[in-house]
Amino acid sequence: MRLLPLRLRIPADPIRVLVTGAAGQIAYSLLYSIAKGDVFGKDQPIILVLLDIPPMLPVLDGVVMELQDCALPLLREVIPTDKVELGFKDLDAAILVGSMPRKEGMERKDLLKANVAIFKTQGAALEKYAKKSVRVLVVGNPANTNCLIASKSAPSIPKENFSCLTRLDHNRARSQVAMRCGVPADAVKNVIIWGNHSSTQYPDVHHAMVNVHGKEVEAYNAVKDDSWLKGDFISTVQLRGAAVIKARKLSSAMSAAKAICDHMRDWWFGTLDGEFMSMGVYAGGNSYGIPEDLIYSFPVHIKNKSWNIHDGLPINDFSRAKMDATAAELVEERDTALSFLSQ
Image (cartoon, rainbow, N blue to C red; front, side, top):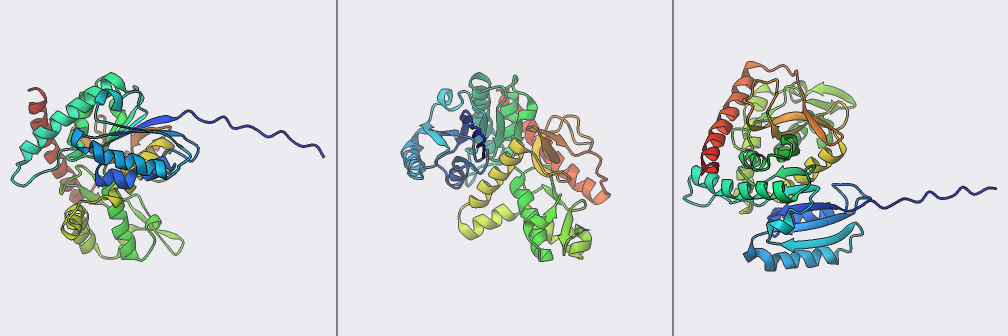
């Protein structure tokens, strides 16, 4: 019997992945999943770059030790730093988790001003040091407007390479519908988060489908409770972050990390045929009448690391009003932020 020669697999070159706010609790839940291959692939070596502010460097050293102690075969190197010139160098992916949190007594415009300074600096660092093909996910709140500021501060990187996280809201909506119908979360598809990652966001299930006993059913017909879907369901998703803080005395970390992984994995490998996911993306050229110079959450499908807004969905009057309300909030945020950007 003739033996066929073994085909040797050439190891992939490592990719450089930055996580900011890397000493924080979201990153602590996130880094292991990235380093073990859950996000960028089971055969993709990783160089993890961990950026945080100088007072957090001792904590970051502990995080580095733990990552080393996991003995993960894909993790080629871990680089802790507080220097943007090192943190943003030659990046393939940037996950910008760190931001200024709202403090007691702080007005919204003060929060915006502080974050404009942070994301202007980080956008400029992306512009100067990162690959032009870098994919940037902004997590730190206010995520949509922070993402817009970062993009405007990195003009040579395509706008399409920037997105903000609304996948956590998407996952929350999907789970609420699944629990209501008594099915697993993956039996629910094509929920949509429109707009801002804030309490004005609009979780929309008018186009969602639920697999019930092997048959796909429209979500409204599967749930059979229109008043819940137009009332408590929406407010539960909108206010879920606050509810977690009230219960846990800390903000969402495990679920946020999972959503980041879902978002980046879909961006890297694509969405399933017939499904769309929610991402905060540049609104230019959208077919839904949303002002263009915004980062707004739309339903998107992804192929070859490029997203496209899912066009042509019919929008009823109920949805239109909620989509416009969250857009109006984003326009106000943008205009305030841009006034600080020019200072």
